[in-house]
Image (cartoon, rainbow, N blue to C red; front, side):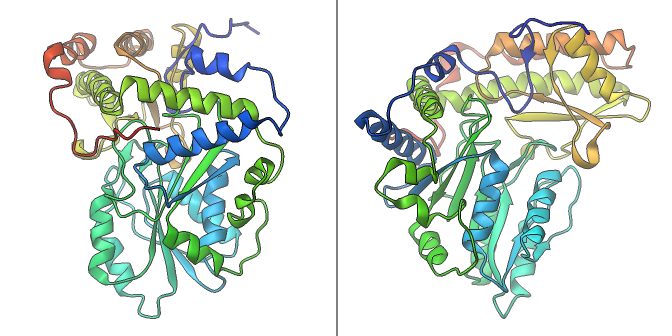
Length: 412
């Protein structure tokens, strides 16, 4: 077996993403005894930072978990969906499917909307389902903001407006795992009751830490839920001792890493973080636009406005071996991209462009993919790398000229 030196592969998957050296260094710091005041201070800084990152007011609660994103999926289900009630999970692709499967495993009926591959959620479909629920069996609508498998980002404000138009009291729960710290997100502006995320994507950390930000309304709703739960229970995580916040031993190194990550985002400035992601995405999209010209490669997301700034999913024609593209990119050109997952397994590859990336790392990835396509003799359009470079030629004076209305500038 060929041995590779750790760190020599350029990681361009949409999670895990590259980890900044400052975060790695912080996570190598020694443990403290749990009674040390610094432990409580670190937890408080992380909670405050996550509230700021999601633009949530101080009366919202943050619950931290030692888990990946699937863990907080389950936590949202068992805290919010009461026995005998249902959850509406609009179809977005594999990740919404798995969330629905998890609901059913927990004996929670999951109502779905029809999935139109390559397109975002149709808010009208959400409204139609809620209007057909006069007995209010649906407790909440669970939405994946950006589906990591498809590269499609959904319009949260439009979905909130659709819910409001029906007069239905359903809570709105958003998975921001693949979108947080990559594109603007505001709990208040989007009318979100619960947001959940994890560490291995825009937060630039290893997988293993996740969190939920909960509104007062959603917290009150959970208190009246008699569904059995223990580790995932929010109320159990509100005790005065720091170990209670984790239902066991506090993961100190993850706290050190998270507060460092939040500081890095704050130092760069969130609006600049978002604009950087848009610039890098434009380079990837410019390259894919050239590659697709021969008809063997294509954007999976058909709606350009719904293409995420986190990951680009490239569909492959039946004649093209997507597995081989991923293998050759990694083994021969030291570029680690992701493959298709779920029902797209073997039919796509994915380029991640979120987290600790810059122009150099994205261009290096694109050169590696271009070289792979050439080595495999995949028919494609010319000048993909030149197009990517051209997309990055925006004058520096214009890069930060216009600030997004959703810029998050509150202090941690």
